[in-house]
Length: 299
Ligand code: KIV
Image 1 (tube, rainbow, N blue to C red):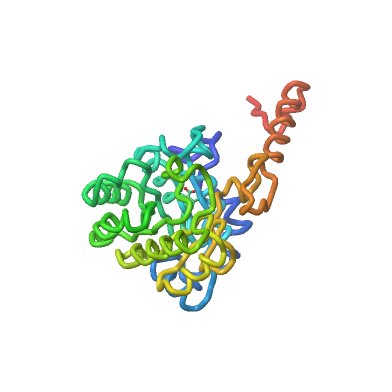
Image 2: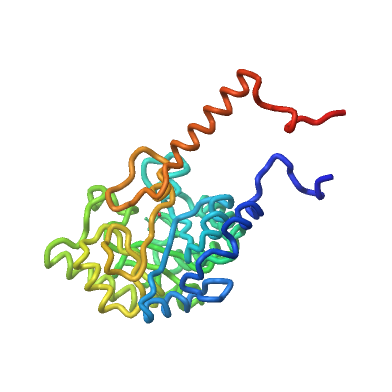
């Protein structure tokens, strides 16, 4: 008999098969022996020269798998708009979307530090709006931090959220919420003036109290320089190897779609594997091979 409340047709996020394969054997990562990655582990990692690992996650099942793999931090990115919700950009993503996904990811995570993106339109109006959005994320998701885009223009928002006791991760370089100003996904910080602007933004984010900063699509030399003069860790995506950590969108990392950006390495071809599994299922239903006796209940 199934326990009360158990849905026997569903795979839950607390998937014991995933745990037994990878759970307690997963590499320690930046938390060392600690069960949970906490904010101070990021700073300590930078000081010790240990690289921080971050992947995006948008749902409980995937989060449990990535968490069991020993990834240090999971980012509930507003890339959920492109990867899961069928939008062309991140702009339509709402705070409700982020709260729902954040809750799912945080509920399935036992080890990783969970960060939730503040979506476009939830913080630009000023510190009060930013703080209200961040407080909602923290109250309703169980995440440990929020992330928002922008340097000097977002410094007051970062300060207000930080002063309220909520860790903030900044995001500089190519910032997808500003894609209409930036002209699409393009490397930022090329040339002396642009690199200087980026450096000033990085300092402003740190000065405002951010605990880390994502650098997206930035020339490696510029990212390396920023990493050297910042005290807080930098986490790169398309920013080369001389940063304090790396983040990828999990669907790019796992090869869920035919195309991945140049800066992403495909560690699997899960899209093709899933398509094959679905095709096998459909073929076996059609020819009667599924369900077999072992999938069938007798009276
Ligand atoms: O939303 C997202 O996935 C991100 C990463 C690209 C850093 O912000």
